[in-house]
Amino acid sequence: MDTPPRLTDRAALKRNRQRADAMFLQANAADDVHERLIEVNRTFTAPAVVTGFPAAWREWMPSATVVEDAETLDLQEGAHDLVIHALSLHWADDPIGQLVQCRRALKPDGLFIATSFAGQTLHELRSVLAEAEVTQTGGLSPRILPMGEIRDLGGLLQRAGFALPVADTTPLTVTYDSPIHLMRDLRAMGEGNAIDQRQRTLTRRAIMAQAMARYVDAFAMEDGRIPATFEIATLTGWAPAASQPKPLRPGSATTRLSDALGATETPLDRSDD
Image 1: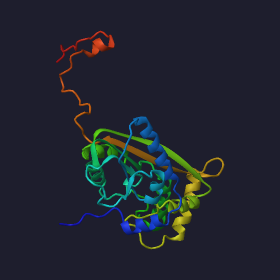
Image 2: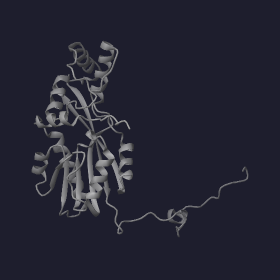
Image 3: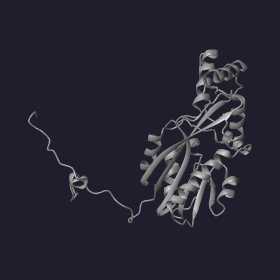
Image 4: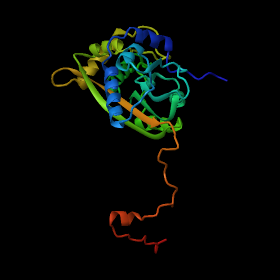
């Protein structure tokens, strides 16, 4: 049986992360998770965090068990009442497998929260690089990860067996002096190109020059700065438990909707059937 192609070159990803020193998007994700936990209004005594940046998350959540986002997560089954998958799911070759492992690590009625880049993330950079490369070479090589849409990401929660799944997105626009400053910042975040099928040689200067010029022409703001979009998806779900609310069986309602709304019910006219 043929081995399916890998999305991520894990060795390259690890090298990129080791050089990272800009944690502002990771910090943004940590702040968002903290606010959501306040809204849940529950005390969690055995949290765990799955992340590509263990040192940063140990600082932000010192009471948590922090593990690397490897293919096999170093989490004990049924040991945690909270598992956070912190802004690294977009690099997973098997995102459903990551979610299933997180669910198994939860106690019944434990909470799962994942944050991930999604949708329109870096759509500006993706489009200008593609246009420039096609113009210069007639071909296209993968430079920016494919990003899952919120509908698809929400479906992963159900496929992984979570109860009460919810998915939402938060758009975040960051502005830079130039496209070069954006690309430097991506490297500083540890989010450089680690796609397994990427081009392994240096990109032609003509491609980069044309892409940078296209970026400014198409997206520059009135003050001359350029925007970069980061769409952050947040997935939440609960480990199944008997105490959780269950949907009623179809046809089991004891109150008519029209009575609840105080409206007059009009029967369907079936004379044309």
